[in-house]
Image (cartoon, rainbow, N blue to C red; front, side):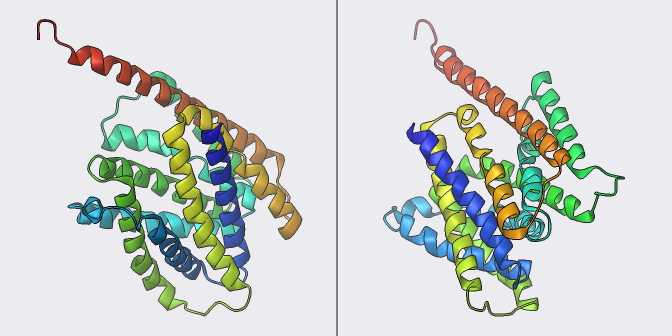
Length: 295
């Protein structure tokens, strides 16, 4: 129940972050929103790791962090642009395709053996993406491709985080990510710089706090519960942002977006289930394989 509570709170935070980004997009450029989200996110992170042993925060993987963060900035800019310019429900629906690309990237970059069931789930996820994007139709736009690009880059970042976590602790990864993200996102922001005015400050501060809060709560949830059980809870973000888009921005969501989102979320749920099953099998087999008779 605690894990479910953490995941639900994380989902609400990420949904609130998307809403604040959309509100900030009315007066600020995407580059600036990304910078302020990272700046205030770093401010929110520092108190959380203040009591952590400094030795545990050291790393020998700075070049890898640089590459990971550069790709992460690309994903962030594309994702924030999509939230600011597409209907919220459509942008969030396409962001849910990230696990599909994570599975593909794990097979390519990590050499993970992906069996037929998960490949089938990946194929179903792609069908869901095509239902939302609908290439060749009147509803197709380059904006949907930008949202899809954010999901692809986010999948690559997830693989890089897996690689970093083999050596560094979670706190170390979070700290160095923000330390790189702030200056990296400042550079493009300077080209379009315009100080936030009035309530826009509230939106960018909220984006930083909600984003960091969502990440921390998500991490705690996964420590306490299984991914396959918690993943469906994260899907609550979609009706949340769809309702906000309808109430505050006058957006309507067509039936095809809901159908595509349902297909993608079903594929994600199955991928998470299979990964949890494989992890349990590996954990059960490890002690057995380690025990050598006669020793």
